[in-house]
Length: 120
Image (cartoon, rainbow, N blue to C red; front, side, top):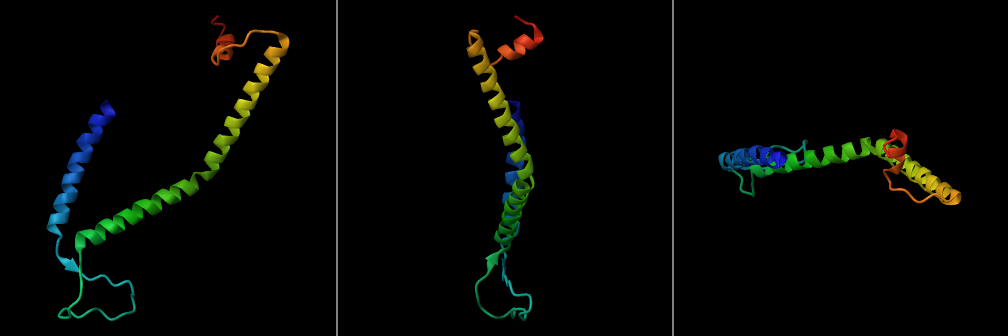
């Protein structure tokens, strides 16, 4: 609940700032992706893109590239997590199989923790 309230307290003002930014930067700009081309004449016709659209697109591309870079950087961590999760599952299955062989009643998943802590 607190996360929701804090999220709204941050998200609503941030959206207001983005809307104000878009309204303040509505003038058209020409975008040229060729750095070696001559600058476009100011008097020439053509199509322009609002400045806020250009900046929002660049921001979106930056966020996406950052997310992809983080995902690749955390690959080794996720691989290790999968390994330890598989090993824990195999060990749990092995413990359960040995209990069945010994004739003991199956225990709850927290039964091993309870036995280790002598709770029962």
